[in-house]
Length: 562
Image 1 (cartoon, rainbow, N blue to C red):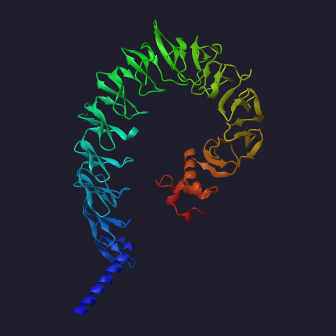
Image 2 (image 1 turned 60 degrees about the horizontal axis):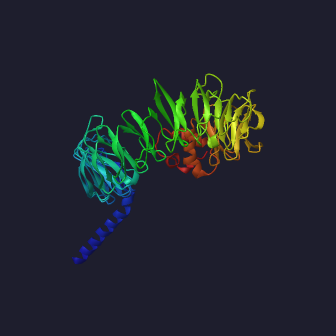
Image 3 (image 1 turned 120 degrees about the vertical axis):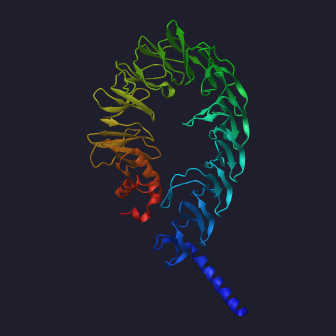
């Protein structure tokens, strides 16, 4: 009798071992009544068909549904989490999934509709509730390895173990920024649109500590270079550092969002002035308009009678250009700016000395070393600028010609459109270079520039010699600047592709946008490491609007071939 029992036990053990060995091959299947179970490779039900839905196994776990409730099944065919959840999310990198108990949802196929009500928690891959479902909302873990949870109308912070490291007492919160701290609000309330009113603001660390106590009625969303503006009410503003130290007491009516060049502007009784990062005055508070520093100077305005006049101050607070002009350029560079008088502009240096007559009608951004494109004709349109020549840092035109257009300064050259309609390049000494009668050109980058005429397109080098022909099957082309050995090409103003520095077409000119080319370069060319073909384009166009995955991951390698 004992021998029979031993034999039976061995048989059961062998059967269990075989079932476990084949468990990885289980797939969901329906019976004739539409119920789901799992079958082995022979098509035999190993898990009884008792579910309204079952998903394939992934990392040894599958989801099963009865009615509108979900559970988890292990590879041995046994439930590891009971069928009681209105929602089971995807597992994160920590091995946790968000679950909902008590909520309601409409189940459709293997997808779950929007869940309303109930409580949220976390389960691990063993189906254990490591964070019991007790929260009305659970956020995602971010790079600080913390997540926000909501209990009722208040938020708290948990770590990856589910421990509450900051109590659920905050009405609202920001995201972690400088020094891994974020703003929190205590005592306020949210309106229907989610905007916060009332209460007090402070800052919370990633460890859940209130590093800056909630004593302010308003704060900056994030610290910038270790500084945040704050308000204690009654429209009074100041600055604190990320330790909570008040570096500028909240005594001003208004101030700049942040410091620029360690200088900020502040407002008191409707006038503005400048202070240092230490809170010391840099100028008197006397200006009607102020702006941040650019290129060593900041534009300022002052009321003169009924008119506002403008000038510049330097970083010491000195008025290097007295506020006597109709207008000034806000963006300076290399201690140069523009001032306006009588409806025309003049170029000025850091001492406010006009370097040109007041005869300029428009100008570009001031470039490196003080170079700037300028216009002299009437009707200058800032939205579609056309420039006549270039000024150097001393205010001299590069040459005595008036061009139909001038733009760019890349690789040491400007592109210029001559009076006869052809294009060439202009060096920083004013010499016309590489004048090949081109009808279209591009800026130099990585030693090459695009050029074309008579339907032929090339790239030239910095000696003006042809580097290579740009392949073209017909139509108008324009070639962009090279970046990391790749230049975008647009054909007939609507078809995009790209080439390398040998002139080889890497992506055929058949895509709708430059972004499409960039996507194929990233998803396909970076792996294939050889020029793409029409088949790559066809498959990309077929799948680009149907999946959020990369094309390479979506399609098997053999599907890319002809």
